Image (cartoon, rainbow, N blue to C red; front, side, top):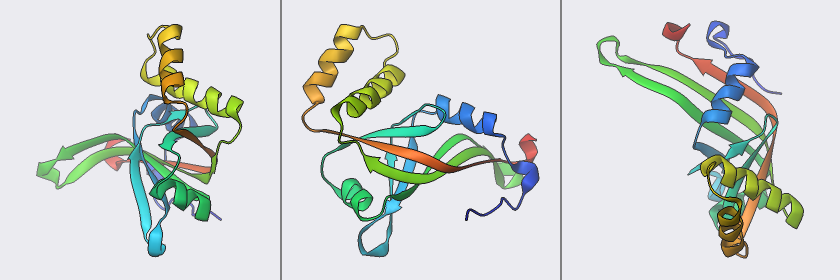
Length: 159
């Protein structure tokens, strides 16, 4: 179902893909948008080794796209060093493929937003974290992407 990487020497291990997804701070979520056009949106996320979570408003292009077609990809760039004298970049990136669902269950939604909050504010007091979540709870939508395929690649020069 998913294509095998053509340049196998440049393929990242599952462990390296995990490292990039754990440490990254943003990526691009690609969905099936309006009129058959791809819709790719930069977004914050959190990863647990199997799934990705994203926050969203309850309505908009992203939600419409997810409701129309749950299939998605998510890309995180770990490195993109321009090397002008070689007319290239030394890159390292990961792409996850899977299906996105809107979390309707409040316990799942709460768990997901807590993971996201801890990632981006690891030193925040629990009281402050809870206040922030409560303040934003009503308009908050959480999305979960179950990963079906994970692929990472790096520039040949980095091997």
